Structures are given as C-alpha cells and as structure tokens.
Amino acid sequence: MLAKLTVACGPMFSGKTEELLRRVRRTFYADLGVQIFTPSTDTRHLDRFVSHAGTDFAALQVPFVPSVIRPDEPFAHRIRSNVDLVALDEAQFFAPSVVDEILHLIHVRKMSVFAAGLDRDYLGRPFGPMPALLAHADEVLKFTAVCARCRQLDAATMTHRINGGAEQIQVGGQADYEPLCRPCWVDATRTAR
Ligand code: ADP
Ligand code: MG
Ligand code: ZN
Image (cartoon, rainbow, N blue to C red; front, side, top):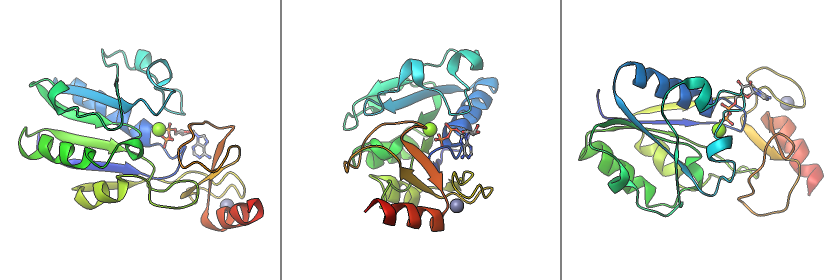
C-alpha cells in the first residue's frame, strides 16, 4: 500500500464519515491493519461514532473501535507497527500539531492516512488544521450535500448553525446544523445577524 495522505472535506451530512468507513472496511478486507482516531471534542464518540447514514461499527462487523484522543495529544506512539491505514475523523478539531504527526506517519512509518473533516466552520471560515492538511494531501475529496433549504442536489458546500451560540466549536447534529448551498447560506447567515 502506497503511503499517502487523503483528505475528505465538505459540509456536515456530505458523507465524509461514510467514505471513511468505506475505506476502513476495504482495507480490512485486504488483510491490512487499520487504526481509527476521533478527538474527544466530539462528544458523540464511541457508541455514537456513526455516520449520519447510520452505518456503525457493529454493522461493519470488523473489530474496529476508534480511539478517542485529546485534540492536542501526540498519537503516533499509540499506533501499532502492523498498521497500514490510519483514519482520523473530525480532523478539524485537532491541534495544528496533527499535521506533523500525520507527515511523520507517512514519511517515516510508511503508513497511509485518511483524514475527514469540515473544511469550513458555520461562518464559512477555514476550520482548524484543515487548510494545512488539504495543502499536504496527495488526494483531496470534497463532498457536497443536498441543500436543506432549496433541496438542490449536491449543491450544499456550507454548514449553517440553526441552534447555538457564537463559539466556533459546538458539537451538534441534525437539530443544530444544516447543509446549505452558498446562496441559501448567505441568506440564512444574513438573517441571523
Ligand atoms: P458527514 O460525516 O460528512 O457529516 P455522514 O457520512 O455522517 O456525513 O452522513 C452522510 C449521510 O447523511 C448521507 O448518506 C445521508 O444518508 C444523510 N443525510 C442527511 N441529510 C442529508 C443532506 N441534506 N444531504 C445529503 N445527505 C444527507
Ligand atoms: Mg462525520
Ligand atoms: Zn440552497
């Protein structure tokens, strides 16, 4: 397996976690080693480490449970030597140090890394280490969702916060966030101000 960095980005509900699970499953079928990490910021972790499509680890029937780590915690030393793919979900929550950790895994330990995360926050600002990860990526996947307002297929590139305050990080689900196309997001964000 060629060691490379793949970054999957896009708004909420665009299928980033679905794609992560798909790749994890295929790697497992190839008898390769996989380890998954999710930041403790995402309080939906472990039992709730599910994609919005409902695929969970029990459904995968593979012995993969994501390790929950602090967003600023070094994790390279926790990765076993027989691992070929390291998958990170909610990559936007990790500290900037995650970039060097990932590059170390790829360059020195010859592992592939798949990082899924929001490219922008609810105000449209580049989110956490995602800009740097996208710059370092060998493969970039930018997913879209159905716009929750105008229903245009694959038009939603933005995430709109329906409920909540002004903190950049507020973990929520379908009741708190909706994927919107840019015109709908501009409307929604303007009304909210
Ligand atoms: P992400 O990790 O990007 O937030 P998930 O992989 O968890 O996304 O979920 C993707 C799934 O969310 C889709 O396959 C679909 O079943 C569901 N979904 C809910 N709302 C939408 C929407 N507006 N557009 C597309 N998919 C949606
Ligand atoms: Mg997800
Ligand atoms: Zn729209």
